[in-house]
Picture 1 (cartoon, rainbow over the protein chains, first blue to last red):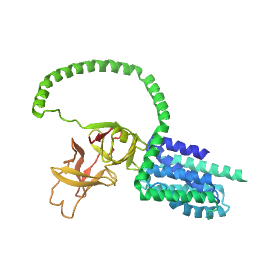
Picture 2: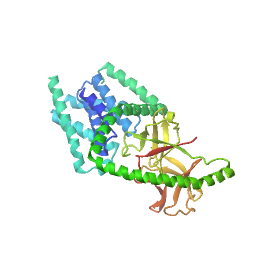
Picture 3: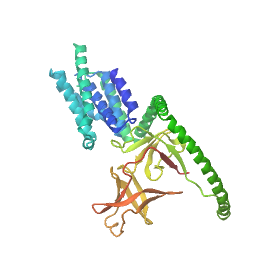
Picture 4: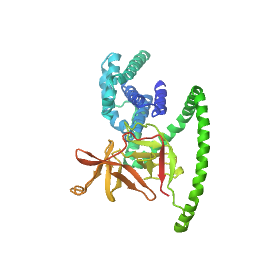
Length: 144
Length: 253
């Protein structure tokens, strides 16, 4: 439910603030997509729909072909999820992995952005990492 | 590997949706525009409330200054109205003469004011969406102006929204006139447009720096930018930061 709320928030607020916040919103959407897909080995329908919603918004805002990531990204992500979730890795390492994967995807989508951003501009991104690890920890507790 | 039947079914459905959007781009574009339409409608109450709060705060802050300005502007307005009346009375005889010679008044191009929905920085996406569409008379190919220069052209349109491809986008291309000679230019995703040409066709034409680049429209000539040189190659320099605050769409009626 929190993710749905976040997605709606990103959808409504994108374009109404400066470019730093817009970038952070896109990054958050990528993170939500990866988190939903990679948090469990067996992906359920709700997570998959959240993945579709968040990737749809990224495609919409960046002008990419619609639903390309659902079709092209799902299968490699499924394989990745299978690898990650088969080992009992600490949740913090998992969250760092998802964070780096999102950062790489973001870099792949718009490489010039990393020349524009200064080091202090990256600070809010670490908030995403903190929330990611908190949510992975809470999710783990819920399962156990 | 997919051990959930429902997920697999959803995947298959979206696979075919993607395929249909890929094969028929018009449907993909319309879906995008309808999504932006939903976004605009959903964010309207929030923008309304934030504007109200902002207005209240700013009016609270600068009420006195504004009252003083209003008094000054009222005086200026009255003075300008008087001048306008005087000028109207002077020019009325010329318009009568013009009417005699041309039988009708010159047609003024129709433009409508639009505003941007979504990203305005054009960092991640060189296209943008505007809040008016077919219902306001906008059609594919119409020019979008910032008051002085051409900002872009309408790429796709629905009843209430339209997508604009900016002059700096890779997807932009147009016929321009420089010194009464026609050329084709294309966007480069940078703040300049390059000339499309046949081999050795342009070498004979000598460009000068700062020559005006014009797009010939039915009713009015539009300015795209000015000629400049990058590595001795002629290019058309567009505005560094496109002004998306006061946009108008030129309707071809």
